[in-house]
Length: 356
Image 1 (cartoon, one colour):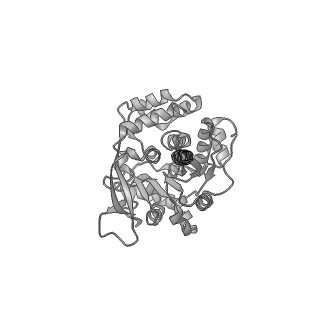
Image 2 (cartoon, rainbow, N blue to C red):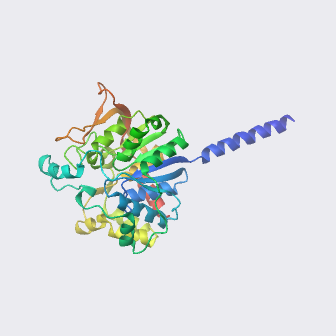
């Protein structure tokens, strides 16, 4: 009898441990989606990761307009057989009124010059369907979810309290609007991982600001000042230690089997840059945020600081700032990633790309 009880207990313990090990981390990816690098690869890696349950992809303005991001996300999920993952269109413009018009003046006033300005640099497409048809020559077999990204975030967090991580790799306006509409979700979010900011390096869009948070500093500030349980920031401090050169781009292009995804790699703007300048050095950004969600041990160096974003219009508009002490009232602590294990991360990217 004792042996039977003991065996039963052992079985229960082993079953519990196995169930715990198999439990997947729920993730919402909030993204200004592009084809393949950088957002597309991030999404497809998360969709295929055995320890991740990608419950939705919410689209936000930034690198691309929302109709474009919606079309690109749907197509790439179709390509990897994951079209059941909801794609949810989000907010079309940054919080600041007429933000895209002010960018024209910033080029002159604040040292931007001819810097990349994402969706602010060209007209908004008519619809996601028109983008899909123009890009891919057919109609999509999948459709975006018939609701708004902000409502999707609120509903899913309330449905699974303390279980969902939000990975925000574009502008922060979807998440910022969600917490303004429903502040009760703030303590229910497990953690937020951002790709944004540059705390200890110069900016990449202005001399002081990184692109994602520069495009909508007000939204980034709202998010960073929300008392989430945990905030992790992947900024230029980590990203610019991950050079992405022509030989690696070609290697990954060769690894990918899906002809549609391979074609995306070949028509990507990076491919053209590498052809024009064989010594050109790019970086990866969003992939790092997704990768550390999949494997937190990739982080090899980090600091914890109180963080904020400058939302005062001027030379430092959009600058991210970190305080070790004497922080402004209302700022929250966040983990700032400084270095990741680049060899392991690139191997992870290549291993996943072999599945595509």
